[in-house]
Image (cartoon, rainbow over all chains, first blue to last red; front, side, top):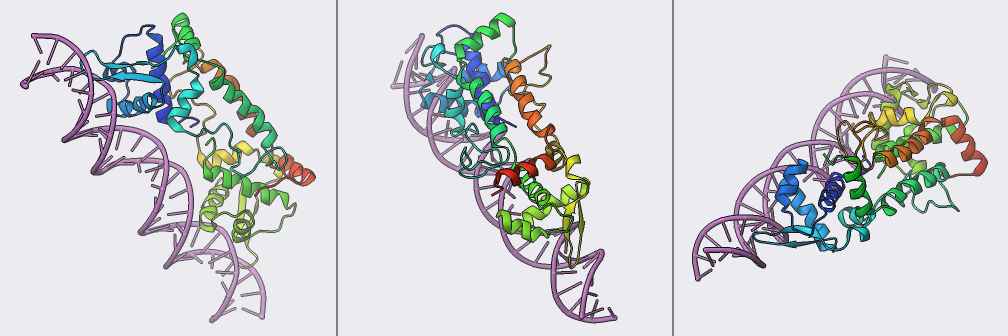
Length: 142
Length: 142
DNA sequence: CGAGAAAACTATGTTACTATCAAAAAGCGC
DNA sequence: GCGCTTTTTGATAGTAACATAGTTTTCTCG
């Protein structure tokens, strides 16, 4: 699996929040029910998004979570980074330390190309763009 | 990590064997020492390659493992398949069941493109080609 | 045939990820 | 202030991947 479950859940939840197009807070419970994700598990994931300044949260009645900044300012890569820390975008396919242009592994060149393409998916797209697409095309998060 | 440790070790070991350009048997111990991989762990991986008809093995003195068929007939994808079974080449990036052209997830199209490129790396290259490159360019397996 | 060498098999331990639960802290409204 | 709601935090299991150790089986060669 390319992404961890945590990353996938966090991604879907963030897209769900952004697609609502409102600043109102949503409860974690509602998100978990809408997307079919374990409430407690999701709560912990969203918590780390909050700590990384991607979401803001309020407790108590009418509380919940919301985006901490405009959806145009949140790249998908930021989400993955906040959730899983180091990603596989820069790792050698064969796990060799110090693999690079000077001391390449056998698959280095081909992998570098594919790697760039994957990297671009997450670095060149924002929550805003994606939620736009979701609403226009009626894409699913579940 | 895109590939599991098992897959990486198996890949490197297979390339090592193919690069020797001889039909003589190599011991698992020698491979494990040359590549810096745990002997027992590697033995288990090579065992499954043997069971899938990619390697052949002999016990006892002068025993060891060798390719079961010409290196030109072994695609890298065959190795991954034998080691890990189902790969991530056909999975949805967001883990949604039934994600496809009709009911796509938000990232489906972009991912499908990157996915194809990765798939090609493993399906369109054989042990023969890669070991050729390794010897010509002096690439490293460790 | 017996000794040694090597793969094959079985078992155990370690770590990280996934998932769930329970309690605490914080905020809202009456 | 009190009770309710909701996030936050900490603790606890289950599971799979990673790693190591030991034992058994099979083969070769003297």
